[in-house]
Length: 174
Image (cartoon, rainbow, N blue to C red; front, side, top):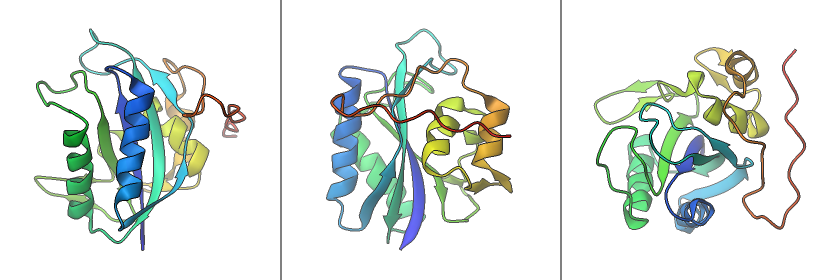
């Protein structure tokens, strides 16, 4: 089994329901086991800012899928949930990004690993900090990257299931 980290986001419709449906889609794949999931964070959009705020979270999975096959699974889940790709950084029902896949570095026309912009995005690093603070991205720990980027523009962490208590705040990096 390989370990991968996926970023999930939604800013249209019932955002929490879309995140839950994406998690169900991942869990339904026999080659994927969702091992850990972060809290949910509300964040401002990046790039195209005239759109609703996002809900974001990160999950750790174990998978036997190769990276491109995992990408195909993620794109299939997006399509089944109604994702339409109209404009870059535009609003979306659901977004699933492969952030990291084991220690693999990959750069081809379909997939870049680790994700090329994750090191600059608090809405990725803060939830990733909850579940994998010591994960190294291009030689730097998530703990250090998250400290550099900070949490500006992020709402407080909430559980995906509103009936569960929120997690304690992530420990800050020294």
